[in-house]
Amino acid sequence: MSLRVTVPGDLFGKLRAACAAEWQRYVGHPFVRGLADGSLPEPVFRAYLVQDYLFLIQFARAFALAAYKSDRLADMRQAGAGLDAILNLEMGIHVGYCAAWGIDEASLEAAEEHPHTVAYTRYVLDTGLAGDLLDLHVALAPCMLGYGEIGARLLADPATRRDGNRYLSWIEMYGGEEFQAAARAEQDVIDRLFARRGSPARMPDLHRIFGTATRLEATFWQMGFEIAGAHTR
Image (cartoon, rainbow, N blue to C red; front, side, top):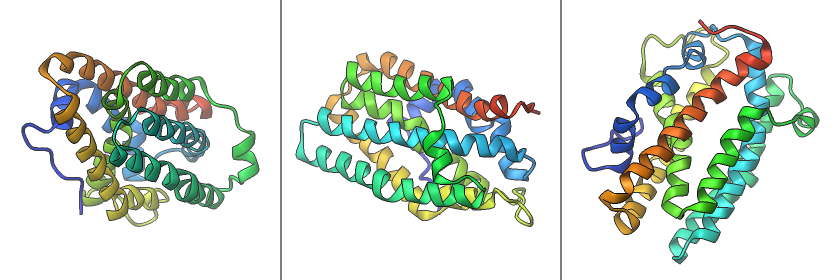
């Protein structure tokens, strides 16, 4: 299964098209190419895993904010379900995944947020605080929908290295049906919110939010190289 291809009229498709250059730098980043062919330096991936743990904590706060920003019970329930999944499922999965890479939970808890992590996560939270629920979900979209697109593409690509690729489990996780279903659900959320709250007049602001969040996603990939002192190729 793969992330549903957007059709004309879908908000995600319009945002991605409007920010095509930023989007390609994100989904085609050397970090992603290194996952696909197995060449990503392991210290870069370990640095990413630690920061991704810290990112998840702030991601949970964003879903708590989404519940606060909701004016309908259905939206509150959706936000609450997302918060519960992060705190009681995804965090545990991530800790277990990090352990397989030799990073224990104590090390994760003792780690400090890198400035790129701070910049990205606080941008999402600030966008949600200053705007409405649609603004917040558009700021979150590059993460969930981008990972869904990357996972689906790499998993389906015959050029992706399977044998001996330590990153295949990451690709299978984000390309697998469980995450793909979550990505499709998030795509449906932003379409539903736009139908209620959107208008052509809002599109420039939504483009700006989506474009900024997408650029920050690319810097999140780059951060691993900076921490590890490695070079992109």
